[in-house]
Amino acid sequence: MAGNTYGPMLNAYPDSIGSNLSAAAQLLERQELRGAFSSFYILPSLYHSDLDRGFCVVDYDLNQALATRQDLQRLKDLGIDLKLDFVLNHASVMSPQFQDLLAKGEESEYRDFFIDWNRFWEGCGQMTPEGYIQPEPQYLEHMFFRKPGLPILMVQFPDGREVPYWNTFYQKVWQEDGQRKYLGQMDLNIQSPKVWEFYDETLKKLASYGARIVRLDAFAYAPKAPGKRNFMNDPETWQVLERVHTLAEQYGLTLLPEIHASYGEGVYRVIAQKGYTTYDFFLPGLIIDAMEHRTGEYLARWAGELVAEKISTVNMLGCHDGIPMLDLKGLLSDQRIQGLIDTLVARGGFVKNLHGAKNMYYQVNATYYSALGEDDRRMLLARAIQLFMPGKPQVWYLDLFAGKNDYAAMERAGKDGHKEINRSNLTAADIEAGLAKEVVQKQLALLRMRNTFDVFSPQAEITAQSQGTTLTLCWRTATSTARLTADFADTSFHIEITDSQTGTPQYQFQQG
Image 1: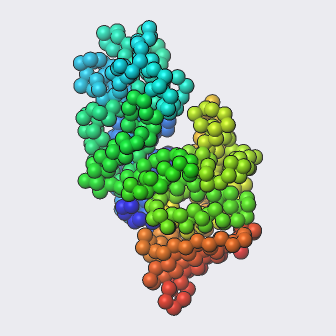
Image 2 (image 1 turned 180 degrees about the vertical axis):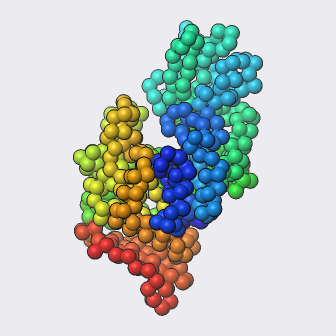
Image 3 (image 1 turned 180 degrees about the horizontal axis):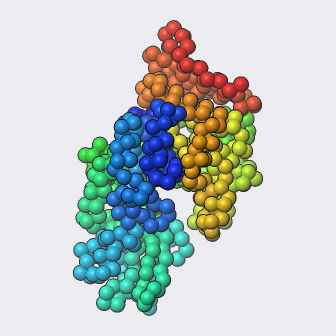
């Protein structure tokens, strides 16, 4: 991992804290937050985008209404580097490349920038009256779908022809003033040299913004081949990842591939074995499970695996998505996962099922604070455990401010708007009120500890032990030892950092 390897990382949209990134920079400049963070993961609405709150990118230029290079410089002046998103698999229909295709059709230089469905499936099925090839059943048998029906958007060329293009995710088509209009996320054709030129240009641009870490969103959907699953194709997925890595390396960028998969599938382990940092999507659920069952058994076991297998992670409590549940399958029993889901729903959360299918749980949408029963002691204990687990801690801004479920935002978003429950935009008044809370002040104190003491380094020896209701996590270097002892029976914990040779105390924090 590049940069300050294990320093805490703030995570927010550019307009989550105030109305734009300037307000977020102003907050980080305040004395209350000085020294708490070494990185900032800014979600992709800082680019020009039109859907999915940033994840449908028109282009990677800065959206000046939300973020400017001056704002980014202020963050750099604070010693804060950036983690930014790069969406490998798709681009908006409003992207200049797709708009050129709509305007020029066969004459467009971007004719093959996106995936012509019929060219892709030529010889693998029958042409339908609607103008697209219906692949033969054996080619679709193992294919992974993100929505019902074939992933096609019928595109009207200037000569009136209808040409199907691959569209894995969202699409919307309507008529306006006698013309066909589109919204959607169109899959990129990684066989096109122009796509790889675009990848290179984008990575260079992100590095110029101050990025040190680039999160690869939807990367596992990019490689496609007839008859394959077309999600995590092997070995093509890893070949693409390595090729992107080669591009990123020349700009000093570290890649963070993003993928949700069950523990039992072992994808996190494969990513680590390939030499990449991976997301710890297991930690959020494991911490809540530990509190409900009053045991750190699974947390200690997971920490031990991370250390033994030298798995580099970015971990978290909450994030812009829900609390992962699918990922826990194989790590916790199905019964225990269902009990965890039931608990979170009882506390106001909403289950997001996989691809709209019932009984295929994916995540629970809730703020982490509400998922913990809106209990300050539990919130502080959860943060302490996160900061002592192996990996680089990522901190969702609403967790930091002990944000509660935002049902009004969810209602405003309408159908399928569950994610907005955990995406409240904080006003200046909200921020002032939050900074006055003891649970916020104590979290900031813990974050400064994690960001300040050298014991939290990649060279540290990390151990984890669970006994009864207690969990002990320890980091040790030649010069310092940091130990967290937590008791799930009463949510108490004690942190002590000492000189490794003399035992002289250097830092203490306690929740009695």
